[in-house]
Length: 460
Image (cartoon, rainbow, N blue to C red):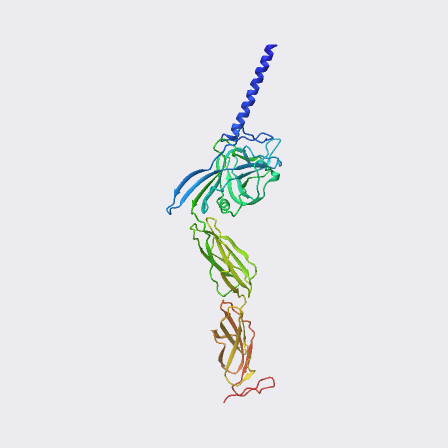
């Protein structure tokens, strides 16, 4: 009986040792090694023995540029990370490895999986610095299935606060726009997402820093990637590597809209120029406009161009423009007073030949015309005539005069039509309809005037 009891205790100790060894190997594989195994089902929150390793920011490189500026590459450890799973919409996974993609392996599948990360930027980048490059780096330790083709992933900025200890699929923070993309292969190693623009926005204050979310292939299939988290005791925790130059630039740019002509057509070009006293250089321009003194409206925002075509101007409307700049250090100029203005002139001039006598007995006589243009004014006139209903002949070509003496080639019926071209080169169209006409009767026998004809004295 004693032998049986000793054998039972011996077998119990062996089973206990095997259980402890299994748990130790599982913990080490998840957090300390380069490979992360597929999760157990169900996947409970991972708990470390002791405190989470405190990873510190590190300056990787610091050099002087030829201009005497300091260029620094700094590495920031992740401050908070978690993943969420659609198959467990109310469960938090804020400790342990980070999973991405779709899990459909086993009885308890986790469904779509997304990663949330947040980095503390404040205090790490000096005011007036320019972000040259910023990369999110994660170490992928396991892929399923093995040898899987690269998975397309993208980073969205998050638009609301979240906590790694409470965030779930059902409490997922609101999204912002997509800020980066990356193809994540199946081979273990580091993968980078270039998020320079997002970090610039955080540093300048253009966007609040609520972190980011990574989303992968969420088609219903077994396809996921597992990354090391900040809880790892190895050096494979997520990090943000930022390359910046300290310009010590705290002055906003000075940008102005270039002068415009008094009148413009329907579509016209607006241009702007600027300088940056702080020296970091202008990163982008914003341009606003208003119509007839009304409210200002955004037109060109965040552009790197120095001109653009303003389309569909309305005839007779008065347009004003103003611009501002944002430099590479994040300094933003304030909008000021109108800097350029113009009036849209979209209609061609209007011209008419003044009335002529019905009949005349001389071969030379004056012809005059009148034109109007409500905008840029008339540049010149064209006047043509036709004889006895024949083809039109150009008589006055691009003239500035408003009258001229016409000499008839022979007796007959003469008709006249005029058009004008304004200073924006908008041409009034010839209609083919006579605007004034006259009968020349200078050779006997003469046409006897009738009541509807004005009395005209013959010469000679």
